[in-house]
Length: 543
Ligand code: AMP
Image 1: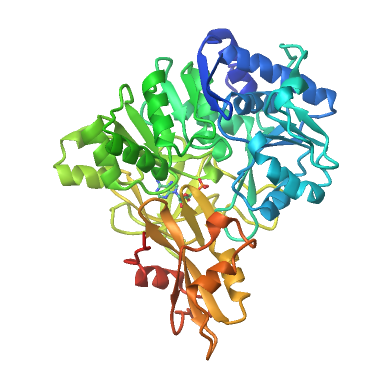
Image 2: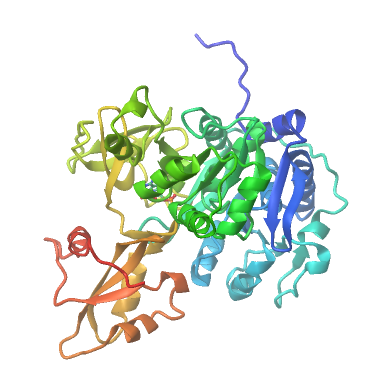
């Protein structure tokens, strides 16, 4: 027997309608390249989303077409989240820190038709324009008078002129809730970046869950500052959650890494919840300590993307009265998988036990399921000691990568292997202990070890090379290059590092080189990265 309840599709358009009707007056504050405090409202932004949809439609954009962005967090980027997805097209947010080669690969693989970009990223457009034949034009997120010169052969518009005069209402289509809404490529795997294609349903379910008390705990009295980029898993879904619950939004624009700006935004705008990777919060802490500043109304700080050091949590809690909430997730998980929020009685744990527990990545958010498995696929006990491959499943977890049918994202039993290794304790708190995927996470963004190894191996004096993540006080991890020279060769660190120039993004270049006589190999001849990570566990980069 079927239930007799309405079946309303869960679409991003439903968030848009709800926000326009219920809290259009809620403020949206942005730092932009030319305005330290741009002010608007959710209602105005969503009207401009409708204008964008009209303008794109006039250019022939149809349901399912991919529209790319290369932009920092601000109100215009926020408008694209709704204008593009609600008209039925797919918003493809791209990381502007990628090397132009990778950017061209991603634009082509996604077959993006239009690119919306901040003026600061014009050099990237110039670098890729001849390699992206499908791209019909680019829209610069600026006023008409600030429109930069168009690179040769590119149809270039300013965003403001592009949407000007378009109606502020749009007859949004009734979309299937399983229709694609947005696309984000992850470099956190081996090989080419892979596209994770979110659906309206997965996005809305994730946003509803993210707002819950034991997740991000967001409501209409909150003011939220996403310092996590809008090109990285939809800024952890904040651009959807805030309009859904009516929370004020504060966007840091290009000033994400600037402690002073973050401090001023938090105190002046009444931010209650801020989210970002550990590197960002370390930068803010350094600014606060160096300048004797305080944080006025900030209650909670969501930290994820990399393991959060306990010292950082303690300092914010003890010196600034801010609760640091450690969370874990992935691009493939929209992103939230676990959050470290307390169970009854945990607050009374002895101090050291309390902080040991808070440093864990946390417990699952319903309805995501997780478990740990040994190499034979047997489920391991949740005893806080057994560790194994961390696998997840749920309605906002990837089922396959975009246009990559050859990659099995999910195993026979429906689990997605995260590439993380973890323990889970009897209270359900997961803790990451290692990683099986061969990548490095620096300041919240991925670096491919394999690509770096290929560059190193292309040097004529190198016999073998391996790149591992080594702990770094500011960036969490940085690449350490380990090299076996060819017999009789004496190539040094400087020459080897100079060999990376122009071949990878500058910030990918390893920070140090260690020369060894041989690398550890497994039975199949593969370099044993785990053994290398253990050997260089105490490695310290020079300041
Ligand atoms: P991304 O897809 O770029 O968001 O990266 C996801 C990966 O980042 C995870 O699979 C982990 O390897 C790592 N990660 C995310 N959050 C945490 C965390 N809180 N602690 C440790 N590693 C994390």
